[in-house]
Length: 146
Ligand SMILES: Nc1nc2c(c(=O)[nH]1)N=C([C@H](O)[C@H](O)COP(=O)(O)OP(=O)(O)OP(=O)(O)O)CN2
Ligand SMILES: [Zn+2]
Image (cartoon, rainbow, N blue to C red):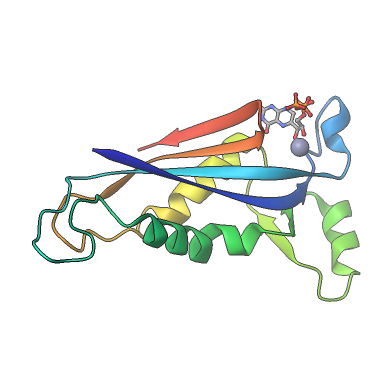
């Protein structure tokens, strides 16, 4: 069985080497969809009986590991020196420095790596992260799968 939880967040970025408009500082209303697989929990009387995982727990962990860190932040490639230097001049600015260029593909992969170890198989139902789908716009997305 697979379940998917969707969350949304706002962030700024740019693609420094892009040959068109994405080299400019801009932002997106990103969406992230987290897909988990596992058996349906059959333990009698527990809150999660009938579920793979409670959607509220999927959300809580996604917020802790990714969404609250990236929401209203500027996601910047560590080698994008000119932007990094500028952001450093802004007092208490929420900047997330990334080892990779913040494309949809890389954000999906980074999010997957942050989330991979965070969903614990509490009920022995073989719970595991299957996919992170990262929407940069409603029409553009990237999937990182297990
Ligand atoms: N493979 C990828 N291609 C592009 C990425 C990316 O992350 N992976 N990112 C961008 C830019 O960030 C840009 O913001 C996206 O712009 P664009 O393709 O022009 O999308 P639209 O604004 O036209 O999106 P709509 O949903 O159609 O409004 C570029 N390429
Ligand atoms: Zn963009």
